Length: 253
Image 1 (cartoon, rainbow, N blue to C red):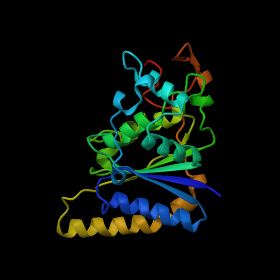
Image 2: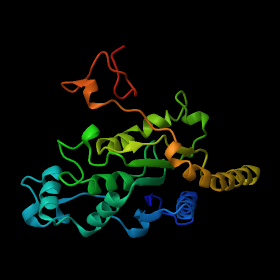
Image 3: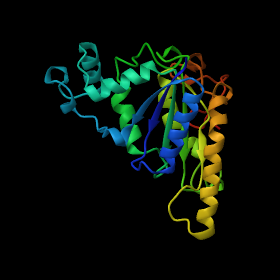
Image 4: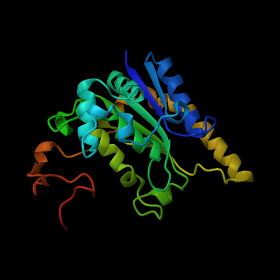
């Protein structure tokens, strides 16, 4: 049995992102998966990391996030809300994250979830990251909406290349050892459509939901992002004979 963790990152329970996440749930259940949920806004998850989350004897002086997380992880005194999320991440074979793109990035709630839940010393450390990450063999899929049109989100689009905008989040999961699937994107989702444009959007979104079961059923065959292997680097720099998979890690022109 496959265990799927659905992470929903939208404040409105009647949003399209929420409906898309619910369709993921329906599809996974119909395929026999065990489904876990993290509705971050619905749970009231606090995305801001701070020293007051931890017992005083776990907090480094001066306060250092990595050292404090490691100490709390080793002492078994991580915040309950964080430990609950960690348990779900560890149990999951795959994570499907549903979110909108706001201000050219995922919501701050999702960034904060990563900062608090992907704890140093528990889910990663210097000896267990990238090719030696603790989550090798597991995968993550981003299901994201943009307010911009598809053309505006292309590599030459006015809103910026959406694949590059999502790369830092993808690399976060790559750091932990996850395979990262090519994001599923639905464009032009916003509340300013009127008349025919609104009708057309609603028709398109209904079709997207209807076809989502097929996406989940084909999950294992979906394309994955390419990242450099650890041995592509020499003293932290990309070797001249190694491939470049992203403009974030590239050879000089």
